[in-house]
Amino acid sequence: MSHRSEFLTIGGVRTHLQHGGGGAPVLVLHPEYCGNMWHPYLDGLAAHGRVLAPDHLGFGNSERPDWLDAMDDLVLHYADLLTALDLPRAAVVGTSFGGWIAAAFAATYPERVSALILIGAAGLKVDGVARYDLFLNSFEDTLPHLFHDPVRATQLLPAEYGPELIVRGYHDATTLARLAWNPYFYDPKLERRLARISAPTLVVWGKQDTFLPLAYGEAYARAIPGAVLRTVADCGHFVPFEQTAAFVRLATDFLAQP
Image 1 (cartoon, rainbow, N blue to C red):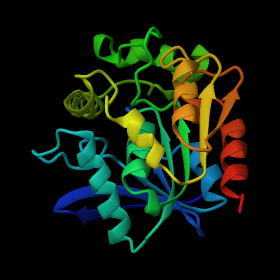
Image 2: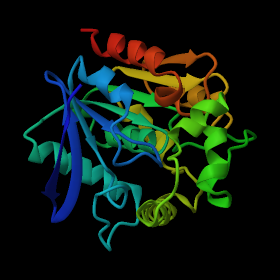
Image 3: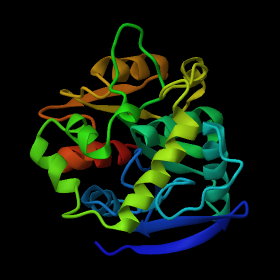
């Protein structure tokens, strides 16, 4: 499906936005990688709604302002983005790091979220359940831990790295470190705030996720009122990328519910 790319100035910050499809708006928040990319699962969602896929501030082609140093900065930015697009509400979909932002957004602005889908969402800490530390490993070493099938991991790797890709990867990693290094990949205040979420919520998790094991999905499902947890077989952390068709079916069926 065709999509468009443009730059918007939101709160004085140049923000890259890709969008496609039509109908009810669906804000899709990318994981710690994969900004500036339009992936096949976005086509699947765009067949059923108006997909809005921005690059987070400091990722992909969006600017990184000097003041960006907390997850709340991204939450407020996405509220401003919806306002700039004249959208009082939207469905919000987020994977991993993007799932953390989506959950925090839905807890902060429950009235602006019509439905919420969290896929392998970061943001919580489950005592006694280990998480993979991506800051200790390179992108190439981390990718196999994001997929159950290593072949799918290599398919996301470009054939060769050029200077532009290396610089962008370093830039994205330093932004992530600003926001998620300490405490590592979670917000100690988030879990108790999740009770504020009022939107219908679907939590999606890969059964073979070793990056953030299923216990984290179960924690989200317990903390969000009425949340439904669905697991995807033969799948690691990046469900939309590894099991695209299964994810699109789950997501579009959920979003189609009255």
